Image 1: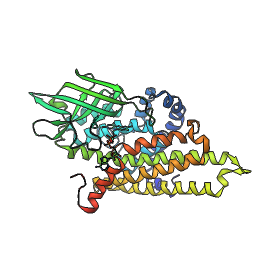
Image 2: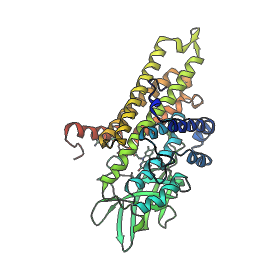
Image 3: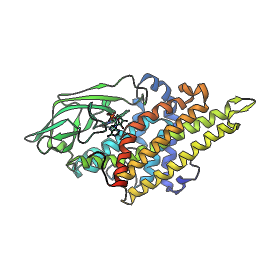
Image 4: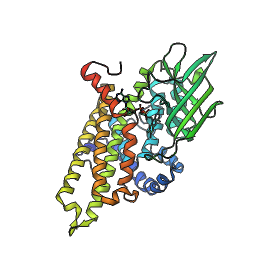
Length: 385
Ligand code: FAD
């Protein structure tokens, strides 16, 4: 599916690592997906194996197995999503959102304390930004409060949609300091008094991901658990810039997974005396899908190179996220279409990619939010103001 061979530019160590990830995803994860997806359950027993792949925290010196490029780290997201977007979302929360928050905004002591334990998954993390009444308006609308009381902070509020929250040991909670009105980040142990979480049920997308609704009722954390490098929402945005680019790579993985399943199906299914893959209009849909995949890989490779070169801005990763997730929606729909009726049962994989794509399209900033970030870069005018 890497039609132009972009992966050939990776180092031998990076290619070997990706081969190991592919092997794990194919042999250990793929056989588990259908059962867990329908049971609305995450295959917890796979977590040690996921950690052993080195896919959590590879961007940070404290948790990396070896020095790597952002392009390689993007391919990790693609390889995992190519088999299952729920498992890749689990890793994206633990790696991008949680390690990312601590890597970007933690003190050296906080990085040394938390990143290695997150990398080996002896500590599971979650990232709490969204609230029942603020999603897209995560900055100005954020209502969770943080009140300083001596050497402690007291947190009050609610967080919604929080991935991994039902089984996390710690949650990075973003809350508004009631003294200066700025958004700050806190590492909150889920065993804290006043902390409770309930699972969001009846999802139709990413059913294996355990999303939680968190209530913080006078939760106390010491000052040492406040992210020392986060003094306003601009620091939250520094984390989101990194993770949005990774979601763009995940969207390519979902396209590739759906496309490969569709190619397989169309070569096996016969109508009018020949495999449907030999019908011209079916080939057109497959060719258009490959075109979207190829253009999206090119865009992702470049946005990751820009990160390595220190040139990646918010608008670059926002455009990558908005563009690839929109292409993903077209590709999964075409792939579902060429599977006919079998495209709406999960036995043939494509149906799962079709519904899972909807969550990727929405989380980490909707298409509209990311377009508005790009729109500001184009015009100089902020539509949020
Ligand atoms: P809303 O903000 O209410 O938006 C609804 C619609 O209105 C969207 O189409 C939006 O684009 C549009 N809209 C809103 N404002 C404007 C505007 N100014 N102009 C044009 N259109 C506008 N959050 C976390 O903090 N941590 C997580 O781990 C996490 N995981 C998630 C996992 C899943 C499966 C899902 C579905 C969500 C997750 N989220 C998480 C939350 C996610 O980031 C939000 O759902 C997303 O940001 C959208 O917010 P919302 O759902 O409140 O929609």
